[in-house]
Image 1 (spheres, rainbow, N blue to C red):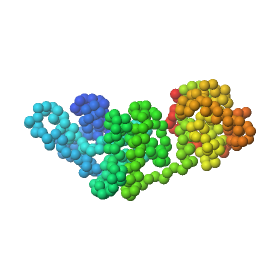
Image 2: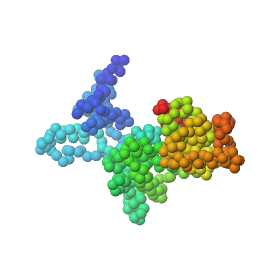
Image 3: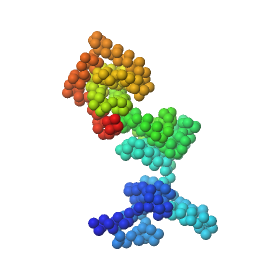
Image 4: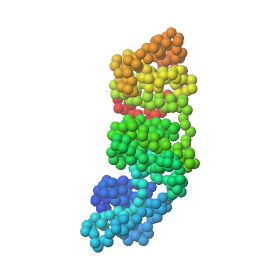
Length: 401
């Protein structure tokens, strides 16, 4: 216990320079950052009775050396000392402050890449950052010296494609690029995550929350995606990178249906109590499973994914007498028309009743689909994936209803 107390006495609670308590600990670097003034403090979690003076501070006998892949590029210069003599500066307080920052840590010549990584972690999670770190490096860091020499020898089109995507994105005309560095970082982060979702590197994320939070629009994300993908393909052509295997048509359809289900039930959670919400949820899942969606034998493969989910949800609401105004609400989610949803629903019900459409009873309105769903259908991969997403908290529908 005493040892723990001695250790706690050495923990940093406020900035040495501005006394701000708005600090961020970066354990992997052994540093604590002041988010107010930018000063970087070396972590000093040592025992009170050890020889700390020889390890830390102005009179330190030993200095930590960081050995990593960027050591030669990240050493930086000596900052103010290279330009000024301390005896000739007018604002000595500012000079010593800048000198202190200069001594506190090595420099990162590509801070924008770290900003993009921070946005991916905060918006999509640390797991997403681990997966997409290589894409951020590819998009926000220049080629190596050897690669740059090779790039200069290429034709105009290839040379342009091999240029750093970050530069291209941040120099677009107004309305395509962001209004600030932070907004540009969010645009690139969202573009990388969307591109990864389309290529099957990771699941798809809904862009709407990101756009609303950052004040960006779809054309900005799409422009950034094009630049990043073009650069990636150019690297593949040069043999400097490899593309992941592309998703097949069934996988893409499955992802689209899962995403449409999430959007639909996020909306329904705001308009129905928990009991009705759960009944409609499981009834809609049952219809999707009966239609064999998520497999190569899907019975409604010719119906667009959003329309299919909309019709299934509307049919489930109708089953429980909750259809009043439902078509309008569902249509607003996807930008469809309520009349289009109702007409497609009526056509499927009629075709099912006449026998023209073999739907395994998905649109037989004389009974609930949960009664028809057998154990094999309950193992439907698409439905299992959707349920897993909800259990993992990707969309906390019920907690918000």
